[in-house]
Each structure stands twice: as structure tokens, then as C-alpha cells.
Amino acid sequence: MNKHKINYGYGIADFWTEATDPKQIEDEFYELANCCFGIRKSLAGYSLEQTYENVELPLPYRNQEATNLLSHHGDDILFDRRYKCPDGTPWKLHNEHGDWCSCKERGKPELSCEVHHFWVENHDEICSCLNNDKGDK
Image 1 (cartoon, one colour):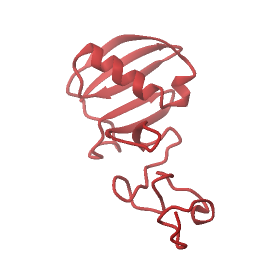
Image 2 (cartoon, rainbow, N blue to C red):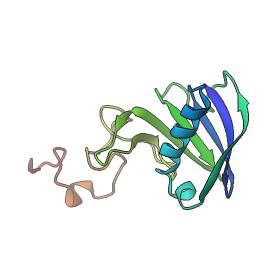
Image 3 (spheres, rainbow, N blue to C red):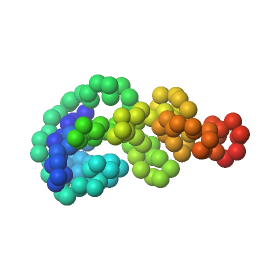
């Protein structure tokens, strides 16, 4: 992967991607930054400050089949852009709250569903997905 330092107006983010084309890097950054509340609310521009080629993802994000990592102000969001959530946003393997995806197909298997890709307390009481013992959807 390649690591890029990006000034987004109100901060600096580290952004990992396989992309090498400057326009593709910018497009991917905007797509993923808009999925992150911490950056989305403070996006005020884009300036590619530095690039580091052939950089491994930090531990524990290696070997997770990720396509991108966005890191800013202590938040790390790991994405797999090959998959989309039901709302059309790129799939988060690790979110800004420090949670790992618990989807049974793409994450670490736990109680989860197509609606909630992360562990949800009292899941069966609040969601009528296929994981619910009632079997209704």
C-alpha cells in the first residue's frame, strides 16, 4: 500500500490506498472521509502533503483484506471498498469507535446482521433480521 498525508483543511489524515494516480487518491479519500463523522464535519479542502510508497498497514490492520485505512486524531477506520453497506457506503472493517466488523461473512463472527455490521447490545430485541430466532424479517 501507499500511505499519504492529506491536509483536509482542519487537520491532517493518514490515508492508505493501493492507488497511485493523484485523482484516484483524491476521489477515494473524499469517498471515505465522507463516511467518517470526525472528518466529514471538518472537510475544508484537500492537499496531498506527502506520499510513502510500499508501506504496510499498521498492526492490527494487516491481513484483514482491507482496501484502505483512514487515520486521523486517534481514529482509525479500516475499509473494504469492494463491498457496500445497504446505504451504499463503503464497508467498514474497523470503525472510528474502535469496533471490528462482526459480519459473519466479512468480519469476525459474532451476533450481527445485514443491518448492524458491528456488535449491538440486545440485538435480538431490536432487530428482526435473519439472525433473530423469531425468523421474521
